[in-house]
Image (cartoon, rainbow, N blue to C red; front, top):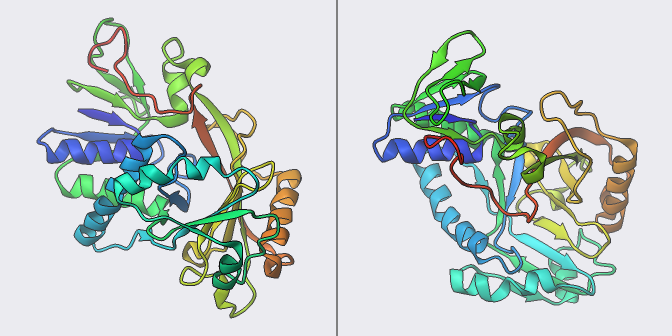
Length: 331
């Protein structure tokens, strides 16, 4: 099998197929965890709350054990169990819809009174928060390192991992015979799996295109911490999601000492993942500073240490796209 794209979906699919006996070649145009990829950011939240969508809750529950096994096997610490704190205003339906699903999946979550929350997390200002929920098992993944670790495991367990840009050769019709690679060579396989995230629409304009997948620009900021202040590190500060305002903000402590992460979950402008300039905008920086000053006032005057522009890729209903090519049976 040829798997094109070494992000979270492509990398893990390659590894699972390899362990089931398939011969696998994993390709990525810029390498696992690269800065253009949707999976290649420094950190990504893993949490159980997904509103009424049971499938994602169940997948999260399963993933905790899988990450523990991966860390044991690879000798790397990739998952940070910081807990996730949800803060809501008048409308906390998104979290409450998940409560019975988390219980069914065996995941812990507790509603905590705002006064108790203030005592547990004195570094957070809970003004405007009407309800708070805490997931103790949740946290964040070192996403870039995880993509690289998965690809290394593919290579170590007998698969081939290549940095190569691939272009389908549709000349035969009905079946894909080979991939044309950017270096002029070709790769033939029995089956081809394209896990290319925001590039899928361009690779399959008639089948997917913008009607089924739209990439949006998402800006992320990492702010400094006061010297020696322990309250914003992983052992004392939770990963957090703020649902109390017009826009949903989230962030996390630690980040391998790269700074305190703040990001806006609002879907941004359309974005070209290949050629888009990854420079943040003054407007969204100002908004990030506003949420920082409101929720974490001790960080209000801290400088920006790093920024990133990544992308979301969104389907019309917000769910995942899986399937066979309607005209090409081995894709």
